[in-house]
Length: 139
Image (cartoon, rainbow, N blue to C red; front, top):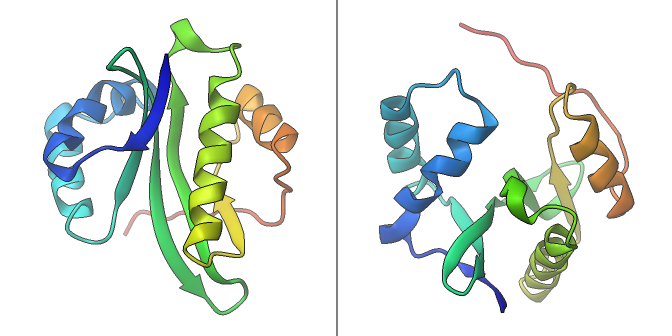
C-alpha cells in the first residue's frame, strides 16, 4: 500500500540514502550539515512509503518570486530504482500539486540536471515545460 505524506523534520535523516543516489560526489557529512541548515529555512520533504518503507522523496520549498508569484519548488525528486516504472512518481507529483493548490500556489517549478534525460522526460510527461537555464558559479 502506497502512502504519501510529509516526513517529520526529526526524521529527515531518512532521506540521506536518496540524496547520496543523486550525487555520489557529495560527502555524507556535508549532506547532513546542509540538511540541518535547510530544515531551519523552510525546507519540507514529502515521502512515499510502501508498507512504511521509504521508497521516494521530493523536497519542497514554498517561494514567491516577481515573475511567478507564490509557487512550490520541487527539489531532489527521486523514486528508489526498485520502484520505478510503477506510476509511483506520478502519484507523488499529483499529491504535491494538490498540496500546492491547497495553500494558494499557482505554479510548480523544478530544476533537472542536463544529463538526466529520463527525469526530463518524466517531468515533461507531467506537464512541465522548459523555460530557462539554471546557472551556477562557485565563489
